Amino acid sequence: MKKIGLLLIIALITGFALSGCLSFLTSDGLPEITIVNETGYLGYYLYVSPVTSDRWGEDVLGREVLRSGNSFRVRLNQPLSRVNRYDFRLVDLDGDSYEIRNLAISNNSTVVFRFNDMVRR
Image 1 (spheres, rainbow, N blue to C red):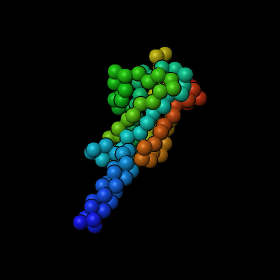
Image 2: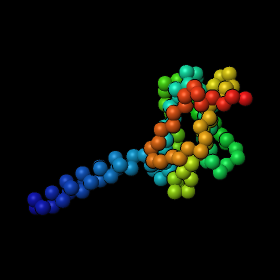
Image 3: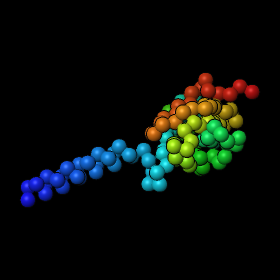
Image 4: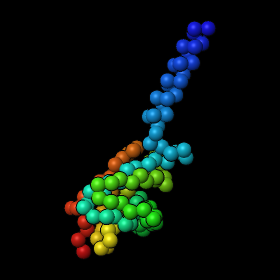
């Protein structure tokens, strides 16, 4: 009886440990990343695109804004085994763009936008 109880405890601990290790994946197996705004400005639009794409796609912030010093979680739409390099673009109220290009993403990555990421046009 003690042996069954011990095995049950080990199974529970293993299950909790594995679920903690896999917390960066959503229920559909797609990774999530964290975007941090350190530009000093309020971000109104955020775009995340695989490097193989020639379009930015939809604004992932939607109705949200990304205040400087704050972060935002983004679910990628493809597994990392398929795409692991992305371009990122944050746009402020004045229309200034901050871009980070060709960044290799791993599980639970953090992408930080800074003022020097502004694209000069």
